[in-house]
Image (cartoon, rainbow, N blue to C red; front, side, top):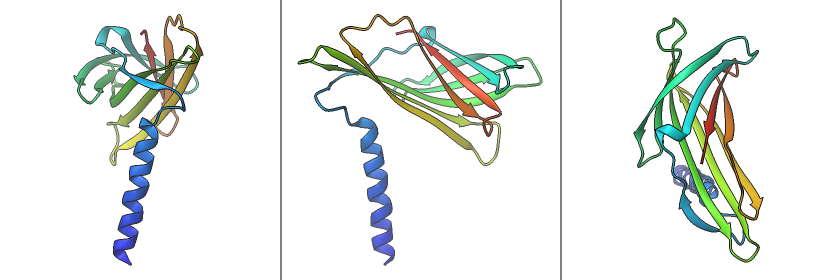
Length: 153
């Protein structure tokens, strides 16, 4: 019975991991969008908007799309996060559509045990999009705060 439970757990993890990689029908993967330290900006905000902390970041593991983010450096309100941010670009050759798959996962390094929050999104456009920037946010610290991310492709 234990082997069967183990098999079910492993199978469910593999299926959920594959769902992040599976494109929409008809779309073909072009590849990861160029994400650099210059075209990404992070900001922490309390959920009531009263407190806003500017953040600094380092693209620590580009091969794994992982960032170290510090918000409120030099204040008594320092927050530290590990962020996984990946933008995959897709196109639909027959319908002239473009799509982006966004994975924005946050590990809150301010608490033990570690807390994890995430957002995964599929954005689809007709034709070639003229995108100035994307803005995403994830609730952190039991949703008392928000870690915002602005990305300029």
